[in-house]
Length: 250
Image (tube, rainbow, N blue to C red):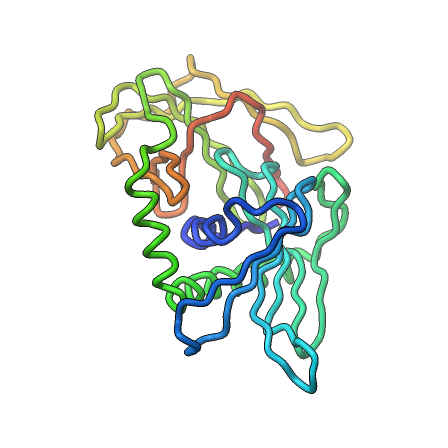
C-alpha cells in the first residue's frame, strides 16, 4: 500500500491527534469560507480514521469526500504511517483495500489505492491552507513544548521508502549536536516470511557500514518527534527496536 507523503502525514496526525475510539471533532476556523473538516476515530485496533467534508442536500449529509485511513506500522521504519483505503463521495463509494483485525492487508487494488493516496496528499495540503488558523495555533502550542527524544551517538535510525515495494534502510548516529547529526548508513539482516512470499522483516547490522558518513540537519515533526531527511523522499526516525517490514513486489 502507498502511504501519505511526510508532509501530508504530519497534517493527518495533527488532525487525528488525541482521538479515542468513537470520538470525533470538527474543525472550522475559516469563518464559513470553506467547508468544515470532520474527523472521526473509527477504531483503535486496528487504528482506523475518517476525514471528511460534508454538505447538506435534501436534508441529508453528503460526503465531499469522506476518506478512510488505516494507520499501520507494517511499512514504517519510524512512527506509524497513514494509508488511505476507501473513499465515499457523491458519485459513489470505493473500497480499495481490505485487511484483517490486525491491520494486515488481505486484498488490495494497488493502482486505485495509490491514486487515492496521491489525491489525499493534495487534499491534506488544502485542509491545512483552508484551516490555517487551527494549524498555526496548534504549532504554536507544540513549539512551546519540549521535543520527544533527542539524537545521541550510537542511536539507530530506520527509514522505509519506495512506491510499488517497501525498501528499508538503517543508519547509526556517529555524533550529534542540537542541530545536526553525522550518520552512517549500515547494513541489515533480513528474513523472508514463508507464508507471504516477497515480504519479510529486517533488523539493523551496525557492524556493516554502507558508503561514507554524512551530515544532516535534525528536524522535529508536528508531534515533537525528531527525524532526519536523508533525501527528499527518505526520512529516518529513531528505530524502536522491533523488526521492520519490507516488500519486494516490484
